[in-house]
Image (cartoon, rainbow, N blue to C red):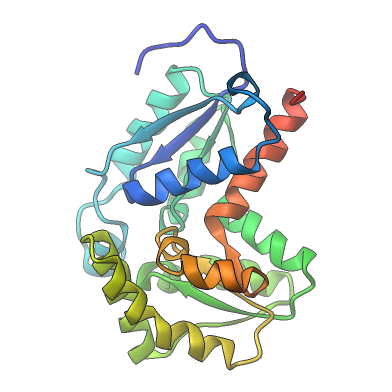
Length: 240
C-alpha cells in the first residue's frame, strides 16, 4: 500500500481472516450503500493478507500470536490514509483493545455493534454460533450479560460440528460445511432464542440459504458491521 492523496473518508478493512469473509463484508457494504453510481460508493482500502496466524490456534493451543501481524496491517492501513478501520473477524476482536490503543484512527468494534443490534431488537435471549476461541474468550457472553441478554451456545458435540463446518468451508467444501451446520443451528433455534448471532464471519456464507429464507432469525455479524460502516460514513460525508 502507498499513501493516498484522496481526501475522502476512507474505510480501512483489516481482513484476510478469512478472505471469503472479507469479500462478503465488502459486498454487504456495497449492497447497503444508497449509491446510484460508482462515485457515490464508500471508498475502502483493504488489507487481505491471510498469512495472519490462526486466532483459535493461538488462544486454545498456544500457537503463534496474530497480534504482531494485526498491528502491522493496522499501521499499513493508517499510513495509507484510512479514516476508520474495521476488522471483519469476530475472534480477532479479542485483541481489539491493543489494536485501538495503537492507532489514532477511529475503529468500529464488531462485537459492540452486534450486541447493540440485539439490544435494539429487544432480545432477552440469543443463540451464539462462533469459534471455540471466541466462545472461550467470552467476548460476546460478557458484552451480552452487561446488557441483560442471556446467551446460549452449542454443547460440546454441537460445537465440534460448528468448528468442523468452519474449517471445512475454509478448505473449499461449502456443501459439506452447510450439512455440518444443520444440527447446531437447529438446536439453538429450538431453545426459544430471539435470534442466533453468527459470531464468525464465515458462518453467514455457510448459512446463506437459511438467512435468505428467515433473515429475522439471525444476527449476521458481517452485515451488522457493514451497516455500521455505512452509518459512520454517512455521518462524515453525506451520500448524495
